[in-house]
Image: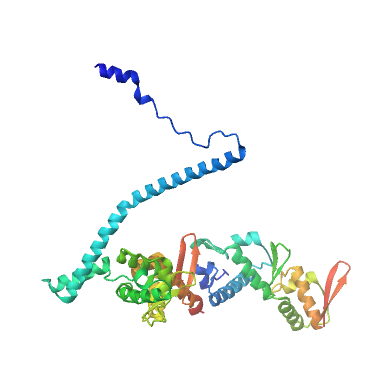
Length: 174
Length: 268
């Protein structure tokens, strides 16, 4: 399924940071949702600032418009404030994109676990993210760092416990 | 012939008169020498100053002649203006009207000057009144708004003599409101100053900007200026104002600054 661009993507002013405050708020909201849905579609979990500038999201070659680095950082800051982004380094060159927040992932995983009556079972992390059983699930292919965070979120809720085993980590659901 | 040879032999042209020994020359008493030396220098400076003054007054001689002629011209136009007022002489109706318009673009009957009305607020008040009269027609022609620089040029061209300084113009314009004149001095965010007719409607300006931009899809300040027949400066101010009110948004790229209808607001 190909990615569907929102109408703003073809609107040249979208790529200029608007000086009018109200207009800017709407513009940034649109950027945040575009960035997140693009990452979700392509299952991107980490972004580097360098590649991002050339990414079709921020560089629309067809209309010859691109978002400036300054503006990209502002969009990322918005995402960070909303809890969808985390910087991996102080210099802001790499970041984690959470188009779904850990709590949301945790909920999805737990739903699948309880739906299949697998509560009180122990899973290895590998099984969860890459096992055959979970192939059709959205969380299939979830990167380990994200998986761990989601499980930790469930742990806080008392719905799971992360266990350390000989050859890696596992989880038990309650 | 003999006279000639005689003159030649004497070479009278070569003998220069002995210059009077200036009492600044070598004197044994050192203290005295220094004081006298300074007097010599001072004298030199004085001479130089006199020379410069002479040069300047020579240079401006022509100008004062010009001023005299100009005064005569002003007198002439003043007398004709009065004659028209009294309807003396055989001048037809539309000749009168034409002449009046020439006068307006060329000279005012009684320019308010610092001499007649002094300087300071009183001067600015009178000036503001006069400006209020002069600027009404040009403002109407230009859609109710003129940049202060345009006003400056227009007014000074009309005055001919006794030109207004920029400060005087600004101070006079600031008094429009207190004098209940139908004009206003307005300063935009960008610092641009304009004189605006009070009857001039802001919403009308903004909605016309929005209509024009929507009609053409998008506009730059230059394109808008051409469309309305206004200066680029004023049309840019209109677009910026419409953007400030949230009706337009901007597209800033290497191609230039372009304004679009604000679809962020109007579209979901």
